[in-house]
Amino acid sequence: MSQQKMIFRPGISDPNSHARTGSLDLNGIEIPTPVFMPVGTRGAVKSLDSDDLDELGFELILGNTYHLYLRPGMDVLQKFGGLKNFVSYNKALLTDSGGFQVFSLNSLVKFKKEGVEFRSHIDGSPHFFTPEKVIDIQRAIGSDIMMVLDDCPPGDADTARIKESLDRTHRWAEAAVSYWEKDKGKQNLFGIFQGGTNLDLRLESLSKIASLPFSGIAIGGLSVGEPRPDFIRTMEGIAPHTDKSRPLYLMGVGTVPDILEGVRNGVDMFDCVLPTRNARNGQVFTSRGKMNLRNEKWKFSDEPMDPECECRVCKRYSVGYIRHLHHVKELSAFSLSTYHNLSFMKKFMKELRLSIEVGKFSEFFFKWKNLYERPEISR
Image (cartoon, rainbow, N blue to C red; front, side, top):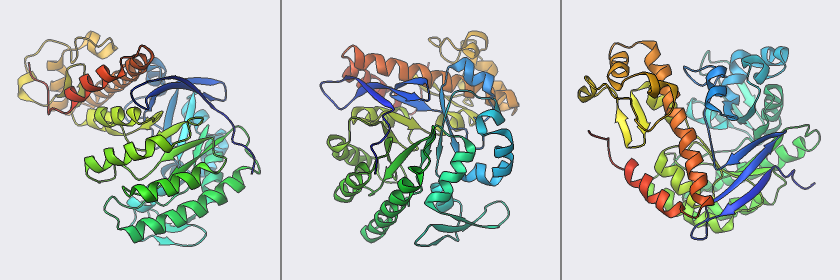
């Protein structure tokens, strides 16, 4: 197998942890890391449009192979020349393999040696994903980064189930690499390692996946229900063994404390629905901590949600007004709160990178960890 394409340029490392800066080169689009990717599952970051994403400055978003395969479907995406043309977004795109959704949305899943058989959660129609097919789907989507099909066991899986997932994940990874290398084009392929919170199995899986010529490596199967101390212990055990020449992606993780733990342990890339989902449920992130907009105490507040925020929402609207929009279920409540939360995430990641560059990551880590481990801000 050939050497992987180098898309990552390491930057400055923190001397007291595994935290580092760097940059991704995705077909000419330079993305500073650590980076947070908003989730646009079905081709849209919920309640926002591509103008919003451009204005916020996000140059890498995530789409979901499973959902896009079902709707709008491969025929539509091929007609439009890929998802980016379809949604009018000209920056970079990462798509997951859809494997997690296959397992989480379907009670009737059948594993085969070649792949996984499942039924659509929409109409019950039968489908079959193989390592090769999910690459074909992602080629039609036009992803800059494609993810391999893997087997993600639940957080409470026993050792036998985890070992089974490793065998399947490793076989599928080899099949995916062989297929991808026949026609790489401009698309990069990331491998995923599993192992639950069993460190021995984690390191076994990491060693196997890292031996293959992937463009990057992803940590799968964490933050799927395991106790938080086990999450931290596992991350700390992985950190010394990762390949520093390739980007490390922690899948499906996006709380402030979890991003801090990830970066402390060498992670370069994050994605999560939490900032957008929480926004639609009335929780926003601020420089003072989390804020529940539906709380009665904000009813008469004429201050912005975050006095230190420069986003267009905080410059114009009061928290009392946005609380009102949530209270009466106006649709604009979703878009305004989501815009603010993603603006917060963009600024937070920029300041995180700066803290590493100037040698103050430890101070940054503890400041934000303390802010976001308390329930809610008060005034």
